[in-house]
Each structure stands twice: as structure tokens, then as C-alpha cells.
Length: 196
Image (cartoon, rainbow, N blue to C red; front, side, top):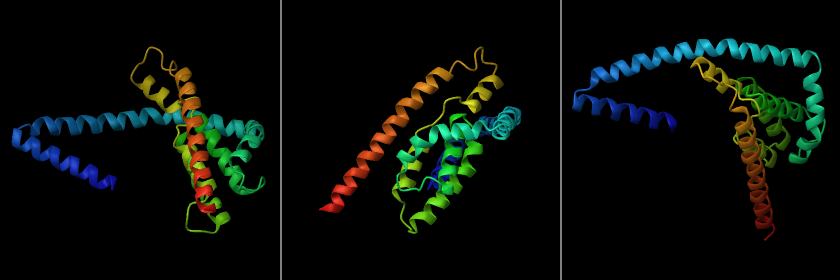
């Protein structure tokens, strides 16, 4: 669906530019944006490599396992359908920790593996309660240190690229809290509806 929307917007833009005689400006915008995107991507590689390396060191030093142990009681409460020692729990914890450090690229493979394990656990084609909760929390912008955004701000010579950390933490607390509350409300509503 998104592909169709993007294609439609592009076609409308090009036709509008042809009618108004501004195709040269559209061409310039396309190529300058493409060049800027490549430059930005290359600039982000160094920061992402740094943080992924740091995560690897933290993993080898046992910091991630300690963080996982710290968050495990909370996560087991969020996902009561999943047994404590199930592989899905490990993937969920790894996904959450990577997201907390703003490493969405590192979090995605863990999230996919967690979803696969939860699907095997539910043994159904429908999304289970745990799958819905996991998706809701992931889309609530679970981030404490937005490393990618900091890298972009550094790329554009921001005077204080890390000044967004405080607001990011506050935003995460608000959005994730509301996401969990809404998830629980919809779950309770669904349970009461099934009882009738």
C-alpha cells in the first residue's frame, strides 16, 4: 500500500512539474537529495559501527546479560504467556536493550526472531497476545539514547547533538507507558467480549 502511495505522489509531482514547467527544479532536487542521502548514509556508518562495537564489547563483558537479568522480571510480567526460559524471552530482551540504545538496525533481527518464536509458541496464524504487546512496545519509540539521531545531528554540525537525550527519555516514558496501558485495556476488552 505504501508503495502505491509513494508512486502516486511521485507521478503527481512529476506531472505537476511538467505542467508548470519546473522539471529542471525537480531534477535538481532529486539529484541533490540523492547525493545528500548517500553522504548521510556514509556518515552514519561510523557511528553505527562504533555503537554496535560497543554493544559487542558489552555483550562479551557480560553487561548485556546483567541488563537482561535486571529487566527480566519486568518483561516476564509484560509477557505472561511466554515461559521465563523460552528463547523468545531472550530475543525480546535483546531487542528491547538494543532499542533503548537507539540501535534499531541491531534490534530488528532480534525482533524478527522473537516474533518467530512467539508464533511457534502460539501455534496459530493469528497474532497472539504476546505478539501484539511486543509490536505495541516496539512502535512506541522505545529509546533512551537516540544514537542514530545524534549521528545525524553531528553530521549536520549541531552545536549540541546530545541535547535531545533528556527529551527522548521523557518521550519514551510517556509513549511506552501509554502504549502498555492501551494494550492492556484492549486485551481486557477482548477478554470480556469473549466471555459474553
